[in-house]
View 1 (cartoon, rainbow, N blue to C red):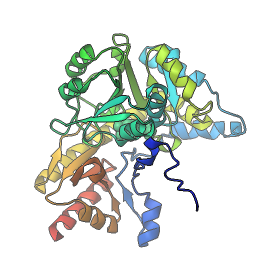
View 2: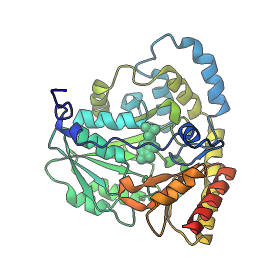
View 3: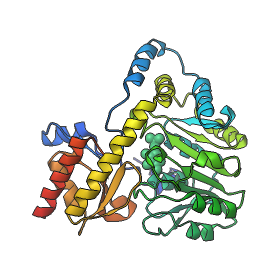
View 4: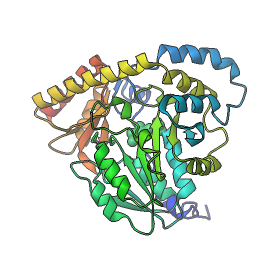
Length: 368
Ligand SMILES: *Cc1c(COP(=O)(O)O)cnc(C)c1O
């Protein structure tokens, strides 16, 4: 090749490290000739999709030759009725990931500054770097977002601050008081993105509902997803709620049909399936209690988590433990790419999956 096609790319993209997904179970089964692989690596819902969703999807299959409703009318109305905002405030995305990208595309110029914490969701850095904006990464406090450090990092050039509550990959959380004091202090021309991907799992009295803060803070964008507690990660659907001007900007940069027919139908159905949601919550709560007790028994430290995953600290580099667990058919998530080389993140699974994971972890660390 006469040209260097890497250097022809935009500056932001040349320096980008692509997202590292959890290993798909089929891939591991193929590589190692295993069966019965357990994947506890991507915080997916271990129950599988709800029966109600499956039957609604079955009925909607005949509509596949048609383009989806670009405006997402029914889902936006259902969301606004359920949570109390107007449909014009909603932006639907192909996963909430898509919406995070739209925020970057709509609001970031090269050279703008974007603040997020150490040990935060990698998509924030991807969105920032892809647009040529400058990441300002603040040090974490007890593995979570340090809002004071973030406030101090705000400059004339700051355009966006990303905060996940609860945080991934650490499971830490911020109280309503902490969030509102922070929002009170952030200049209104700085967008604050509150990523609430795991909000449905949290059972803490002081935990805020970002949606209820929208009317007080015009620069707030709340993102949510159907990928976790609603069990629809494979269909890719999530959304942002913001003021209508921000929603208008986001709608300009999205693909006209960024959310497909099936995802719309599944999300509309899932939104009303309270039974499934309560089961997800209860299963997660019981699984979390099991991990906490068992990790203590094994003498392993972990970061207290309110999400659907728990991040465990090993004595040494976690990579060999990850590899040895893989070979036993249990996929967990190394987080070295988040700057946490001694930790492994484990998604809470079904009871039998959790027990198998703990058994394998115990065996592997004893042989280390
Ligand atoms: C899983 C996750 C999401 C959701 O991503 P989708 O694109 O909606 O599947 C968003 N933010 C964080 C912090 C997550 O961990």
